[in-house]
Length: 626
Image (cartoon, rainbow, N blue to C red; front, side):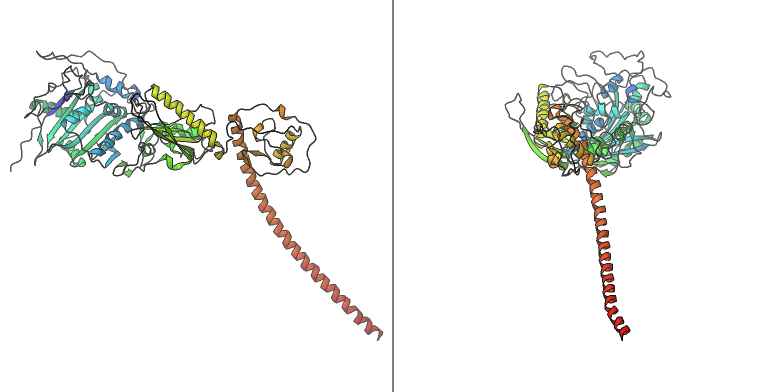
């Protein structure tokens, strides 16, 4: 059979607002649908020279450019004027993502949603653009893909919230905000099979193209093909001239030099799936790429966050802090993706730079765990119970890590949300995990909408921390809240405690010693929540009156806990010294025992010699007499 004649056509979709009837800009098949009213060529604009570069490749400055006068084609008779979306809106809309990893998470969410359509993986990788040898960010999944209508829903924004069949109001703009946050341009390839018809589509959303050509409306060139038969057959919406003009636009502003290179991208997808390529990645203020691909061949990192966390670690001088998941998620995409979803996937993988991400369950590393139920007060009659897992991290109390990991519909929204006051040791090391489907996340899915439900949840989490801390803080070396000791009225107890500390070579002065860690030293003991077992080696007690129990200044529980931690550290050091001294004593005792044995042997030898000499003396006298 002779091959079908290929009819190339590109549809230009303007991102318009919906009219009252909810008419969208979806594709129309020439054989069974009327052509869409937005299939005309882009209006001619006063072009900006192609050699003009962006004023700034930094994301936070990319929206600072002057908008010149524009001309607009006249409205045809019988056609309604529509609201237009200026290209600047793409940038301002993307600023909702303050954090680049939050934008990447949006794209991962889209791939995870395709699990219900058979997706088994999403791959995130870096590829090099041949045109200018620059890096690009690649997302690819093997889900159900997007047909021409689905592609337009993905690439369009500004529609009403009506849920009629002719509207796409139920689709948000997460794809636009996330891709535009990561780079200036994105090209999307997708293959899908719907109702026995196989199609492939490509769409280009280019902030660079819109700026440099001086457009005052967001224009997205798209190309659709019917691949149901043996040959690729273009789906035509407009005229042949539309195809010639718009294919040239796609090839000029995409990272591919020829139509063949463009079409080869579909071969990477297979029979169904989506391939997203984000290029012209944003730079930071220093003129280097915001995303780092060179620090780790199996990871993608944020340069500024990695530098900032390293400096914090250096200041705190805690070696293990940098390796903890709560800090690594700030600069490591692999770490962030490992806790991004609450439940482990069974038949789905996130593949980062060729290596699958191992999902990490924070609950596996908690100790002294409690399960606390919470019933939010909802307006609906249905009762909801949320189970919160709360416990100490295994490194507690050494690492200052705490907070709740709050998920929404399996997706992490707030990692390590600290609900206790800053500067307080209460709750140190306490980590919780819960899934709060009863509150709505914010636009960037990095926080929750402030509502009465959110406020009540925050208050309940504070109470959970207080209750857990009160009952279990002593397990990690803190003094229970409200715990008091009956201090002796003996005026010499303070000087006795001083002698105990001096015998342990501690710097702590008695004026700084908290009341709760001082015990009656008449039996030679001192404690701080846990008995240390140190004895008072001083043979005598001082009779100098230093003060009485009433002289001690009151201290807060937090101060007491901090003092306890310091004393525990010093006790550990002292115990190590004590162990070394014991070994020395044991060695000396062995040497002494050996010396005693030698001494006994010598004494025995000398005694034998003496007796032998005494026995010889009478024999000699007898000889003389004779």
